[in-house]
Length: 224
Ligand SMILES: *Cc1c(COP(=O)(O)O)cnc(C)c1O
Image (cartoon, rainbow, N blue to C red; front, side, top):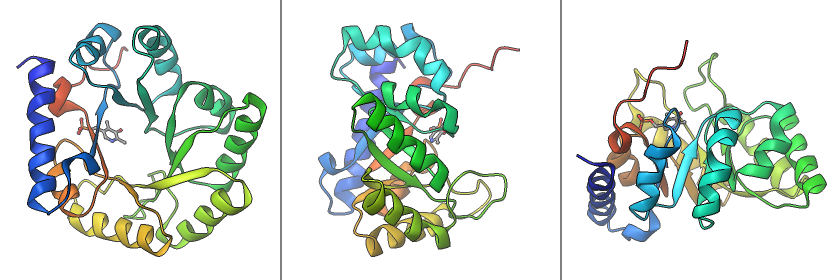
């Protein structure tokens, strides 16, 4: 399958999953995760009309996206990987949406970067629903305070929550927990679901699914 064909197939599956839950297809966004893929591969997806992309590294994205954006200024680029405070200015400069806000220090750095650059971006709070020690994200218990800090104190535009469920657990439990935390904080955005489970995530209320390998194929191995 070409990338254009995969995009159509995944797009159709997203629409079907939305309709199966009595939701509108346009209420579920498909974020094509292009991490590790080179610009020519991404350009195929752009040429096929896709405009919403996710990347997990700031530096890698700085090498690929400024040139692609020149040809496709209406792209929306999301950061879905961990962010260090010393990279906040670079991230705010490049990404339209940052999905991985997970601690107060990072939130404060992002607010400073916005002010310095004179830019406003959109943010998701990442929640470590599985409370895995090695994984990024605020714990479910910390999430409410972090949302309040970002929204009310720092004035960040928080549009929703994001999670990456533990690999060996029932994803549906984590999707349910994320949607509960969102509901009690009046947040409508739910970034959840990847290639293996995006249809289930949509049944649980996902408004944005992050799909990589089902669109682009297996990721290239990192350079040694
Ligand atoms: C890589 C990645 C994805 C996409 O994973 P696939 O299984 O290839 O669809 C989604 N979300 C995050 C946070 C990722 O890092």
